[in-house]
Length: 437
Image (cartoon, rainbow, N blue to C red; front, top):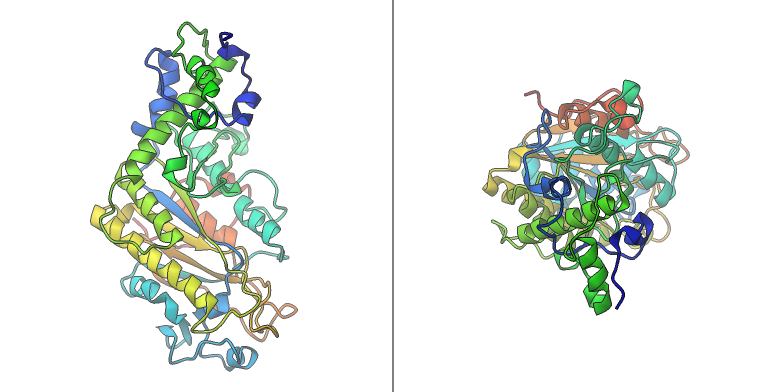
């Protein structure tokens, strides 16, 4: 068999062939090992890596009006005669404002009563787009043109990688710091929100799949990777070369895999529901408990495109909300048992809400403004903003009152301790959703 030359592999070939993980060699140069073992080392100087953001994406367009129920508004029952949540069923948040939670959100109501939940009402953006894909990209990029890298990718680039710290946030900063950490998504593919210019997220659905699988495909793939990682010995891996890049990538991936799989194998401190979302959050809690230096985690809960048979207090939407609330409740119980709850802020959002009136199929169609939820002991608990009017509408849709980028700005400035102007590529008034230290 011909001897493989690792310098013959290009970056495109490496990534395209899916050569992701293999055992790291102890013989590789030290400047390569510094990159690989950064996950287990102290964080970047000047960055408080004790603070973690977890994003929960409610995919499909969650019906905000049946989530935060305006039971004090007669219009709500007139236009939702078949799916409205009865006043006596709603979990009361504010009797004076006539607002309550869907009865399936009992787990969130407990968190609200304990001062762990902030409800941000009427969140949206100008000239809303009702396409799932475009609107989600707008939320991910923090750009109404839905262009550019992700807002959290920019944050990691700027705060953790030193990229974009030039004048006005221009992309002239140094290369990623050896101690930087990518975002982690518990999804098949990484969300755009985590994609940066320099930083690239880790994404996996199950820890069993987050490993080098080349040998599972064909045994012949073992030899080139072993040569690539230096186990064949004698490679010229000068810094900046293709071999340097390939070795860095291989070692980073291997150490990431080892640490993550070891972390999520640890039994959680509380019992979680058996839903997919709960298992995602359980893995996030395990990685936090294991001391990974990741500052941003991303999970997703889908199925919210309820055009037909949505139901009211019972039905498909009720089950989706119950799954979400129970997973969140278990997550914060686990974090508290770890004594990590004060470190972790959770932000939940959906790409848009639903139209005010129900449709002929007993469901709701794509709409605009909807609530966001922020959870954790650091949150300014309670209701933020005014509930959108059900009479002063924009062609049958709610008018937003709070730009979602103001929520992002408040989280970026007051929790992630970064410059919102750089991260969001614009000036947005930060919403005070985090308690003062």
